[in-house]
Length: 413
Image 1 (cartoon, helix red, strand yellow):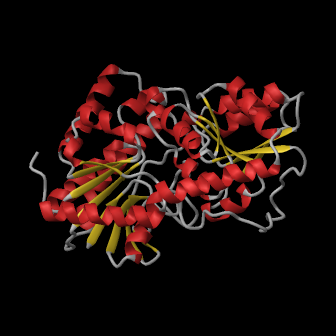
Image 2: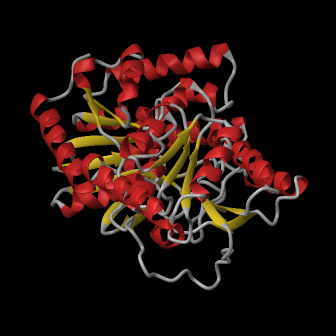
Image 3: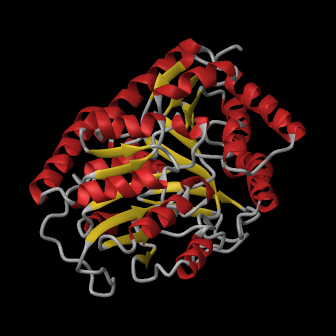
């Protein structure tokens, strides 16, 4: 198959679509990517990239076409809106030109947010006369409200109309959590055209046994170590981590290790200083995904948090899969699907979203467990991962759906 991937985010930005693209190529498919200039999560262009130059790129021998974007900058609502809309505009304007003369069997859309990535994909679907698969990672417009990005009823109504239009023209909607199915149907998707397609972890996410932490990364040697890794944004409920750390500050020695970057990082640093937690909360910086398993090995427990909202309760944060794959015990301050996975796997403890007291209690409980009890949790998590989220199994399943969509042709709705 010749597959066009449309995604606002792509390598060197760290998203699962990078691994899916290489996985499809490994299986003999021709893959091309239409994306934007890389600037996530810092809002600044990656080194060696400029706003207009380097329109053609390559990743693992996969051709990549890049359109200019208004950068995320500091991630304010108006800046994100311009960032999202600029991909729609330039994707529709330049995408057909960059890909002129090329035929594709299928258009595959990756949507961690924004949903508007479907607009240039819809145009490519029409021009190339190819069915479109849409991998839904984030529910719109619900997540805009949950993240505090939009409150205007007029804007939300307009976004909802766009979402319904896109859903009605999707040949197959792939949802990353089963709890996404009902909202997708309510938004206009056909139940017969929805498939459950969860995230996985790249193959380099595995137990890093005996590997040394790089000397330039300063990790405390003492105390119980809880590590949070990923985007430091509004949705991650970072205040819950700070409040839990404050609760345990004078009780037990817990070191909270923060790995990653994002628009709430400086706020988090300020709160740590204000509450006198600098000797407990340590910011380790941001690293490539390939280095994360070694960093995970330095922690006793890996932490996942999200805001308390019905939208986030429906999702499984992708970090949950990466944590499970590395056979580390997981502590989840998550409602709904994410917490269910951790509990069902026996991989750790789950408390409610934004429950800082529950999080502190769970840390206290896990800090008293023996090393063997913690290792057992990690092993159970890895076993669960191999059954539910193993990469090759899921990509093979996706191939079957792609062939199904090609055989059925474009949907007429």
